[in-house]
Length: 257
Image (cartoon, rainbow, N blue to C red; front, side, top):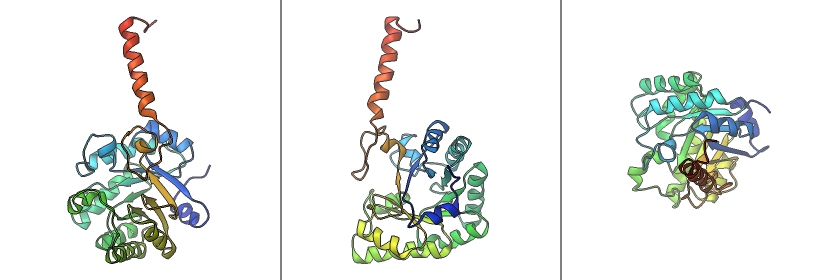
């Protein structure tokens, strides 16, 4: 096993496809790390998968810092990326840099933030300060209210050109990789070919250099998942059955012995 970092992720482009996922606690982070997951994202998707919110917007920086610390302490080889939650970098660059520093101090190897051209100034400041940035363009969940729901982006020629421009802009600003979320596969392939940095797709087709899946989706803990998800286990049924068996054995006196 090798320790994944900015340099090894950059070197993987065109050489090795990377299967990456989220994790929000030490237990699942350790298992993902031991399985060889190269990048673990402590995503603001925890809001929907772990905290019970309808969107990612209510997630606070304190939530991220606690989860990043737990994941980082359990991880040896994977690169840990901490998501910047909504409000933590829309508050002016000085405050955003301070918040990103806090995420790094909590244990992250890099931060992720959403946006294209509009956040390039901040990306430059962060990278100049020694904080690696993983960018995120296409469908950006923190803009769900602007979209009127979680909707695929880049479907028209004009919209596709904007996503491409955003991806090229964040590369020029210093991002070491970029997430492409919920865009047409043809557009994702065009962007992947145009960029020198790694593209990480989620709902963006098979041509990206890497893929994300939310941990709860791929493990079958979330039973209703987006159409692009492949579930590699169906743990909800297993876990529910284990809880039910425990409750029944306590009720009947079979446990404890």
